Each structure stands twice: as C-alpha cells, then as structure tokens.
Image (tube, rainbow, N blue to C red):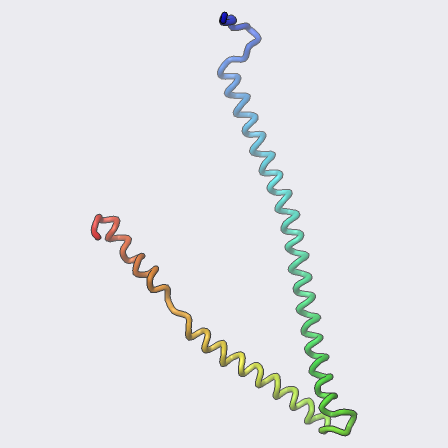
Length: 134
C-alpha cells in the first residue's frame, strides 16, 4: 500500500484542532440552548400546574364553607330541629374538636422526631479515620 504525499489542500493539525474546538464550542452552545428551551417549557407547565393546585385548594375551601352551612341548616331542619344559632355553634364545635385532635396527633408525631444518631456517630469517626486511627 502506497502512502500518498501530503497535498497543499490538506488541512494541518493546527487547523484540524481549531475546527474541532470550534465545532465542540458550537455543539455545547446548541446543547445549552436546547436545555434552556426545555426548561422554559417545564417551568411553564409547572407554573400552570401549581396555579391549578392553588385554584383547586381555593375551591375546596369554598366547598368546606358550603358544607358547613348545609350541615348547620340540616341540624336546623327547616325550623323543626335546633335553632339556627345552635346549629351553627355545633358545626363550629365540630371543627374546633377536629382541629384539637389534629394538634394532639401533630404534637405526638413531632415528639417522635429524633436526631440521626448513627450518622452523627459516623461523622465523629471521620477525623479519626483521616488521621489513620481506627
């Protein structure tokens, strides 16, 4: 197999390196542009999702208010049940009892939180290990 002589039109090593560097730079900038455009789409979708969750939460609050009023009127039963002011007071008491139960359970759960004792113990061993001690 014969080796062909180098022609004047063949690129030099310096030119090849410069071309490769330019192409890599262009590729990286195009990848960054692609990532930015994908993030814009994701952020927009995430923002719309959060807004929809907020709207759903607001509607749920309105539903709870309407449920509260309807329970009070159900207790009143068109004037044949308890007086309306007592019916609303009963609904208020139910919500107060529910909130109290949630606080009670929440306090019990918070008291169960403990420090990560094993991780702390291992963290204290790191300086000894770096010094070569066991």
